[in-house]
Structure formats: C-alpha cells, structure tokens
Length: 417
Ligand SMILES: Cc1cc2nc3c(=O)[nH]c(=O)nc-3n(C[C@H](O)[C@H](O)[C@H](O)COP(=O)(O)OP(=O)(O)OC[C@H]3O[C@@H](n4cnc5c(N)ncnc54)[C@H](O)[C@@H]3O)c2cc1C
Image (cartoon, rainbow, N blue to C red):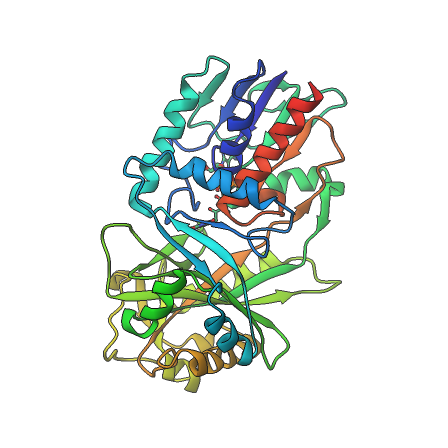
C-alpha cells in the first residue's frame, strides 16, 4: 500500500514504529522545516509521559501497551535519565484529597524534560530514516484532502491507498477544511477547558512534588462546573503559547535547569449544549479578550488575593514570576473571564488550601488565559481510505495516548494485509 502520513508528531511516531518493517510505502508530510522546529506540541516541550486509564484521552488503551510506549521513548534518550512518580498510590494523600471533595486521579509518570526531548525525537527520526520504505517530506504543509471511493487524494501531492492524518491541535486548519467538506466525520463537539496557571514557591508543594511529581485531581465546584489540575511543573517555568491570532499561558520543566517555583494549570471544563456548537470559538474569544487587555502576545498576571477580590495587581511581593517580563502585564483577569469560571477556580483553590496549606497565599501568582481545546471527535469508520489519529481525532490528549492510537492503527493494517 502507498500510505501518506500527514504530520510527524506522537501519533505518527506510533503508527510508523508499528509498520516500519512492512512492505508499505510510507510518505510523511510535515509542515515544519525539520523535526525540531515544529509548531505547538508536547513532543517538543516538557515530555511528561504517563500510564493511566483515567486520563490522556477518551479511548481504552491497555496499560501494558502504554508502558511499552513509555519504554520506547525512554530508550531513545541518550542519558536514560528520567524523573518518575506515582500519583495517589500513597493512601494518606488519597484520603486527604478525597475528604476535601477532590477526586484523585491515579497514574504513573515519567518526565523526560524539554532539553532531553530533542534527542529523543532526533534518535527516533534517525532510526526511521534508515528504512528504505519511509520517505520524509519536511516544509510540506498539507492544506486539503479529497476522499475518493478507492483512494484518498492529498491535494498538492497525489493519490494514496491510505491517508493517515496526524496533525495534532496545530493542524486545526486542515481538520476544519475536512469537516466542512465531510461534515458526517464529526461525532461530537461540545467541550472547552478554560482557566489559569498558578505559580508558587517550590517549598509549598515540595512533599507532594517529591511523592508524585504530577498531582491530578478533579473537583465539582459550587457552580456545578468540574475543575481540575493539569500539567504540574516542579521547579518549572511558565511560558506563553502563540496560536497565531491569540496567546495563552502554559508551563514546562527541564531535567537540568531548575527554577525555585512550581506551576500548574487549574482548568474549568465547560460543556456547551445545543444549539451552541462552537466551543473553540468561545475559548478563542476569551483568550483574545485577555490579550486585548494585556497587549499583543502577552498574558495577564495577577496575585491570588487580587484575583479573588477583583482588583488590578500593581506590585508583586515574595513570589517572582518565571515568565519573562515582556510576556505579561500586571492586571485583572476578572475583566476577561466570566463570573462562573472565576467562582469555580476560586472555590477550587480555597478547597485545595485545606489539603496543601499555602496554595492560596495572597502573593501566589495567577496567569491567564490557559485554555485547552478539545478537538471534534471524528468518525474513523466512515471512509476506509482515510484514518485520523492522535489529538486531531478528538480521542487523545497526551503523548502516550496519541502514540498508542497510531500504534493500534498500524497493528490493524498489518492484520488486514
Ligand atoms: C506546550 C504543550 C506541552 C505538552 N506537554 C505534554 C506532556 O508533557 N505530556 C503529554 O503527554 N502531552 C503533552 N502535551 C500534549 C501532547 O503534545 C499531544 O497530546 C500529542 O503530541 C499529540 O500527538 P499528535 O500526533 O496528535 O500531534 P502532535 O504531536 O502535535 O503532532 C502533529 C504534527 O503535525 C504537524 N502538522 C500540523 N498541521 C500540519 C499540516 N497541515 N500539514 C503537515 N503537517 C502538519 C505539526 O507540525 C506537528 O509536528 C502538550 C501539549 C502542548 C501544546
């Protein structure tokens, strides 16, 4: 079979790894000019891998396969250095959080770090390059796909027996075009996560960081919205993420270069019901409003007490931001976020304070906007010559789930042959 793989991220890696030894002719089209300079993706930042049945995506992935893929990535580091943790195996922590109304999420973590990820990608790429049936085409964005009865046409390139679309979140323009042309591909489209990133001194969360590195909990707030922690970065850095027409906040950590602060996201999940069907539009609008207040390419930074009391922050006190000054403005997030979201986040932090004293300190830092979009869930059973894998399919949200999704598709194809 002649197979096109559109995008070279986690999903594509899983798929190619599984079928690289077959006779299929594989062409990979990646919009970036090389493996390093890709668009927004966790394959280029942080590299926290986790094994869990409770998070990472909305599909079932055998824990054994997840661990196999973690080992696959770790085997491609040069140093084999990794930070690990197991969240909520320790029953004392589990009970403390549970008592306060939180739902603790269990998982095993393996943190590679932004600095080491480059080597991992490079080593994987060098391995794939050795295979004569695999052809890489960088600087090759694909902007349209046409599905035919017996093949799929990649518009700028030609016909393929199978097109595997693995463009992640950053490939939303291609996905939007596809779903406009083939609206029956959409199975579901209702959610967006909107929130903030909290930054605080390491010592407040030192025990928790040591015990589990990443603590993930969900909490049903007084507004009815479910709020969760996401992407904890011990000794990490806050960064901005540029989506082209708006800027959001994110965080990461390195394996060698450590800061004195920990940051993590606090996200409120909004499930928007009919007739509304544009959660991405809604999230983007709030992000743009925040940017309008902060200035182009900047996010809003506020101390927790001002966030709670709806006052503009003018000075910081003990906690110094790891985000460079040119990337933020001291301001008031209340001017951009709807009240129901603000109340949900404050309720969450106040309850977290009862489990981790110091989390709600007045001078802790809050950055906004932090947004996580859920891609439309797409139907992979509809067209035999088109498969959509990884985050752009709407069923994965993590490196291991996206890699596994690709790997499982590879397995299916090998079985069919
Ligand atoms: C900043 C950040 C940090 C993250 N940290 C983590 C983490 O620590 N752990 C974790 O599990 N998950 C993390 N994630 C999520 C994780 O990155 C994704 O879930 C995972 O990479 C999804 O894999 P994918 O193959 O679907 O997409 P990606 O890995 O994003 O790959 C998609 C590829 O397609 C390319 N592409 C896009 N459009 C086109 C086009 N039109 N034509 C050709 N190529 C195209 C992109 O350049 C990219 O290389 C993070 C995400 C972000 C944004």
